[in-house]
Image 1 (cartoon, rainbow, N blue to C red):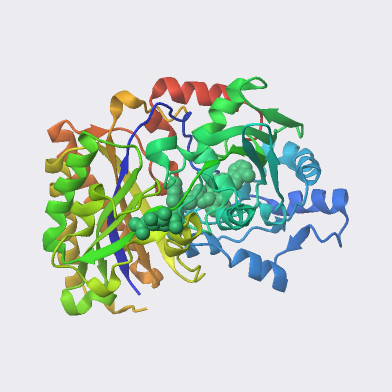
Image 2 (cartoon, rainbow, N blue to C red):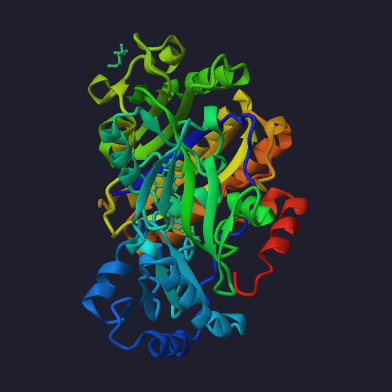
Amino acid sequence: MLRLLLFLASIVLAAQYAAGLVTPSLASAPRDGITAAGALVQAFGAHDDRLVFQGTPQYKKLNGDYLSTFNSELEPVLIFLPSTSADVAKFVKCVQPLVGLGLVYIAVRGGGQQPTPACNNVAQGVTVDLRNMAGITVNPTANSVTLEVEAGVRWGTVYQILQPLGLGLGVAGGRSNTNGVGGLVLSGGLSFFSSRDGFITDNVISFEVVLASGQVVTADPWTNADLYKAMRGGGNNFGIMTKVTMRTFQQGSLYGGSGFYPPQSFPSQVDAIVSELNSPTTSETHLMVSVAYSKRFEAFGGTVGLNQVYYTAPTAEPPQILEPFTDVQPQFDVLNSMRNMTLIDAANELTTPNTNDQRVAYMNLHVKMGSATLKSASDIYLAALYRFSLRKTSNNDGNGLGLGPSNGPIMSVLLVAWWDNPGDDGLVLGTGKSILEQIRSEASARGTLIPFIYMDYAFNDQDVIGSYGSGNKKFLQTVSKSGIF
Ligand SMILES: Cc1cc2nc3c(=O)[nH]c(=O)nc-3n(C[C@H](O)[C@H](O)[C@H](O)COP(=O)(O)OP(=O)(O)OC[C@H]3O[C@@H](n4cnc5c(N)ncnc54)[C@H](O)[C@@H]3O)c2cc1C
Ligand SMILES: *[C@@H]1O[C@H](CO)[C@@H](O)[C@H](O)[C@H]1NC(C)=O
């Protein structure tokens, strides 16, 4: 199945903003993972169940479990499965000398849901898979509740734990159940509540992290404050995060869902989102409008408009503010899912099953909120799709972020592609890059381009850390001078 999406997500920069983003992970250049594996066998013993070797059924299962085959195709020599931060510390001490000499690369994997090639797995290296670090602790204090979450947890599990407590608690996490906690708290992270509560990482109270030295430290506003700032957006460049403490908030029902409509209405939806976000009357909306190509809509020419819009405070009536997005006519009424919902319902609806055999590419840029740029973006996209479909590829059915309130509101322009034939990589990626380049030069000519690139939605040739601005990049590099990360 081929699916392509031009996705416009609003980022309203509230009072807070995150610390800088750094380049996605370690590269995938072939290195000598065998020596590292040998050192780990010496340290842990050959039969330790934390070491999973290439060629075993367990390895096959773990290494096949990524959102995108761009990552499951990479084959580390060994997968390390820690259950405690002490395990991670012992691992880091063991591989540190080899990594320091450039003899081996390691990769860190949380939920495995970031599609950026080689961000969470490494050919011929060693991959640390955090999935067994799955603890969640709820800590009620006098006037708030905090959550301690270990690095292998996915957001859906967090929502499942919170809801039955019946305290009406919410937390700023991923919009899909399968998104890992680690990737999102370290990269920035957009939640349903971003207009109100900032990036996901703005809701982090403290991190527990294993540094290159093997030391387990806390990073919060009082202890290792620079590290705390750098990790909030800086990605995996500072150490292996083992636990994160998050704030929670009172959260009643949400009102929202998805609506599909013919692409002719897309420009009017762009006008609606720009008009709302340029003079927001509330910080309780989360608005995403997209235009997409999907085989599912072939009978209608293949392209479709998609709105995913939310009002994040309880409301007795469907909120008026969403009407421009929910009332678009004509629309495919049977696919409309707008309703009163819980956080669990909302995240369930946006969860895509992991098929383990799809090639997935995300690439992104950011522009100032303005109709002209966004409409031309959709024109560029649709024109490219038209040429693309002529090639008949569709038959493979198959806060160092450098962003502040002065930049906002801005629009995240994200291209998403899912396909399954490796032979189409060149065509799909080439088309995507060319669409993005054209949108970039269009926005640049209009003076609406924002240099920022979002780490989680970047392809591996996008310079994420550089996009935070040179001051932020320098700061992140200084904090990151820790030896191996
Ligand atoms: C269907 C879908 C929905 C999505 N929804 C959202 C959304 O709502 N909001 C949003 O902002 N993004 C969203 N994304 C993007 C996705 O959530 C991010 O890419 C996120 O990074 C995934 O987290 P993960 O833990 O699964 O990451 P992984 O793929 O495991 O890792 C991502 C990166 O983080 C690093 N990392 C992970 N854990 C640690 C750790 N403990 N210590 C050090 N480094 C670590 C990895 O090395 C890697 O570079 C979505 C993606 C998909 C496919
Ligand atoms: C949504 O549910 C809440 C709680 O049950 C209720 O108070 C509210 O009236 C409902 N709103 C709508 C729009 O149905």
